[in-house]
Image 1: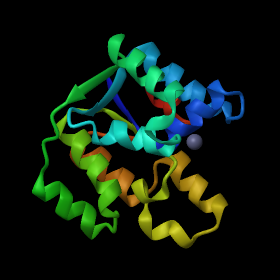
Image 2: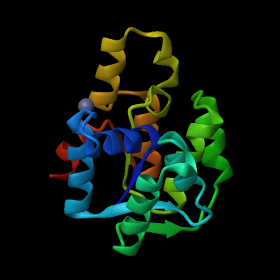
Image 3: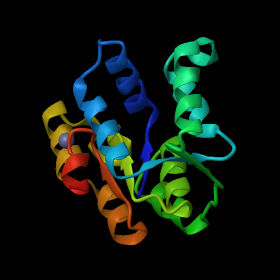
Image 4: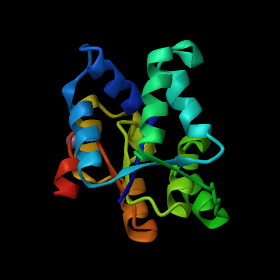
Length: 168
Ligand SMILES: [Zn+2]
């Protein structure tokens, strides 16, 4: 089973390793490794995003972590196969290009789960809602983008706190 971890959740995980993060991120990553692995693109676009979000390529700790995951087979690098129909639908739903790229990649790479805390991957239209409503959309799978991905692409988009409910 393949999972995608967005850059902010990756940063949350690294923060956990440094003892300053919310442990929901560490639990999400543990959950992934209990049943599968991460998928990323072979052009390393998304790995670059992980590195940039966590302090750039100067951060040897993160570079070592990613190198170890690659060596242990915990990240599978896959070709980025883009799909025009998917991109068009995501654009109609208001998903910003940078976030649509994640879903487009995952669809072409047969990824089953995307872990994110970014409302743009669940329901961009709710961006101006209060934080309680946004958290509810992320945690309950009710966002229009999450529903589209589940129905049409067979991808579950989940917050880090609820991924374990989908996997177990
Ligand atoms: Zn949740």
